[in-house]
Structure formats: structure tokens, C-alpha cells
Length: 119
Image 1 (tube, rainbow, N blue to C red):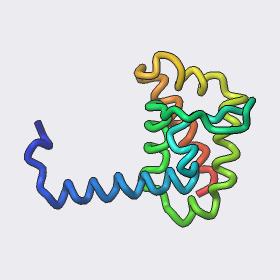
Image 2: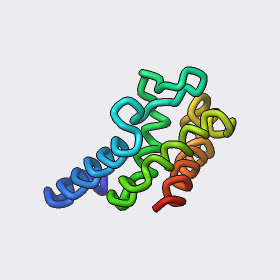
Image 3: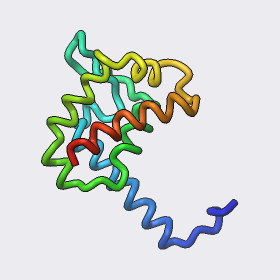
């Protein structure tokens, strides 16, 4: 209700933030890894897009400095991939009961902590 009569300028501003965030996700994860799960046993990205990973990546990249992301993307990506081998709570947060607030908070916080460590 609060946003049904949003001004065009505000819509444009939100659109710009959304597109900017998508660009930052693609800088880190590339088009193959954006919103996808890392398969450590195969050393490749799963082809299917994951809604829980979309949430985590978008929230973690929101309003972050693009130049710092570019400068640190290798380290960020390396630590992100480790989540799929070493953090069973993270894996659970993207595989089951993904809509629960605790699981949502866990996965978004974990990825945000990784990005914050480098920027």
C-alpha cells in the first residue's frame, strides 16, 4: 500500500540500484556462477538458478563499492566456494526450509561477511 503510488523518480532510483547490484553479482560470480550453487566434487557451477542463492548474492552485493569488488573478486569467490565444502549450515540454508527467516538470515549473513572482509 505504501508504494503503490510511488513517484517515477523513486522507481527509477530503485531500478538503478537493482541493475547495479546485478552487475556486482556478475563481477564476482560471472554469468555461469551468478545465483548458482558451486559443485566442489565436479569443480563447476550447477546450471540451475537457485532462488536462495539469488537472495544471498543480491543482498550481499547491495550498495557495495564496485571498484573494491573488482579488486577483491578472486578472494571473495574463493571463500564463497568454500561454503559448499565446509559449512553444512550454509548448505542446509539453501537446500531445505529455505523460506524460514533463520535460514534466509544465515545464508545472506555468511556471504555478506565474506564480502565485507575484503571491501
